[in-house]
Figure (cartoon, rainbow, N blue to C red):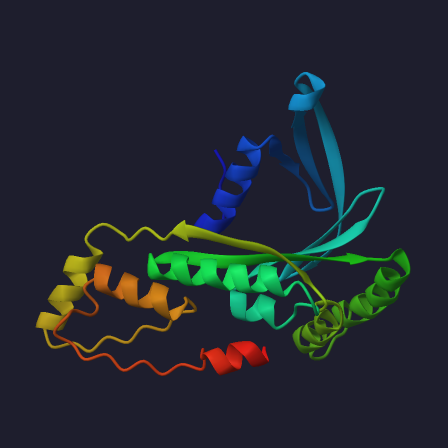
Length: 224
């Protein structure tokens, strides 16, 4: 049974396991993936990926003998501003999927990657090590170094998952309203997702007037 910091992460590794890629073992410096090859008569092999660097809450570096990749998973607003030029069809299709999933009240994340040459990685890694060992403004310097490499990404697609409510949450919120309490919610979800979840939790209802202020317009999307 997998344990994860979020349901998104648990769903991701569970899905890949069902497809024949089992997140088998993890150490501070290595990830072991057990691969099942249906086309090779069910042959199973363990493949080791060395973790080169971890950028907290943002991305994970993994490397095998053939290539170095930066794998990325995050909110669409974060991922889209870091994508490279081109691949407009994938961007439009993923935007459409994000809107559909958001309207269904699902939590969404985008996935992307960037292939790197050994030379480019090594130059960046020198700056990363310097920032990591800095005694002043370490977090700020790490963020600045991360920005140097977190660009020109290639979009893979998006994932969506149901964010289950705690039992009794709608009734609890409704009771708080009856007691005269005002409730504010700060969320990183898409507008469509936030509205649907708010209805499901009795945070808003059909008798309330909604004011939606958003920069997500067709003109801005075209500019992006």
